[in-house]
Amino acid sequence: MKMNLYKIAMSFALSVSLLLGASVFGLSNAGAQEAPKSQKAIVVVSFGTTFAEARQLNIESVEKRIAQAFPEYDVYRAFTSKIVMKRLAENSNIHVNDLETVLNQLKKDGYKEVIIQTTHLTPGEEYDKKVVATVEKFNGAFDTISIGRPVLFFHGENGKPNDFAIAVNALKKQLPALQLQGKTVVFMGHGSPHQHNPAYQALQDQFDAAGLHVIIGVVEETDHPNLQDVEKLLKERNIKKITLMPLMLVAGDHANNDMAGDEDDSWKNTFLADGYQVETYVHGLGENTGIQDIYVQHVRDAINGLK
Image (cartoon, rainbow, N blue to C red; front, side, top):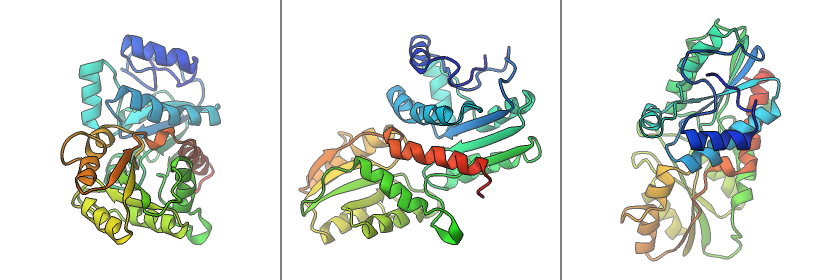
């Protein structure tokens, strides 16, 4: 059955999904399909997560804000991670489709205007290969089809927004008091395993320009700034106390294990072994209302034709 995100109350939808183990968002199995309530659709496409609470707090929260901001649009969900979709189906009987499947169904159902809003933080490999490349297959399939950009995209060039400065203002909402000398937040981003992702250094530059005690690293060891780069900067800045935070939409496997896990090689235990005082903040960016506002604005920009 196809169901729009908020044709029923959110609290009821969440309780049904927990009780029945089925996704109540977006398109499920193609079968008995209702006629679309409008000719406009927004597809919120995320990497996905198998962590139920993280999915609710970080992905559904963003979907909800978008649906509330654009009531004239039907809102659907898609994931890009095949592993996540497979595990959800096998272990939890939750069926989430990939973007191509959702777009094919929207075309079949007669939608005319489609906005794809990615929740990916940066325009990296996942965004390029599983969002942009998929949307290109549907050129001409709808009257209009547009992509809402990731959180970190424009640098303020040619009159465009400075997404990095906007993101810093949003992230300030969750920073602890850092006035004390020798204390900093260390954000763990994802990074790219195949090519360097410059977005993290650009964001670091914005934090530095704002005078905020923040260091950004990435979990991918082959990308930079990796853990070794972070440790070097901590020593240079004479830091003794660290608050670890995930720089990811979802506080899933990376946040709970690679960052804050009990294994010896987690970032938390690596820093503890090196003599730092460490606190952890295991909350994804999807819980941050400032980040939610960014996604809403990027949908609005896509509707208004900002390329």
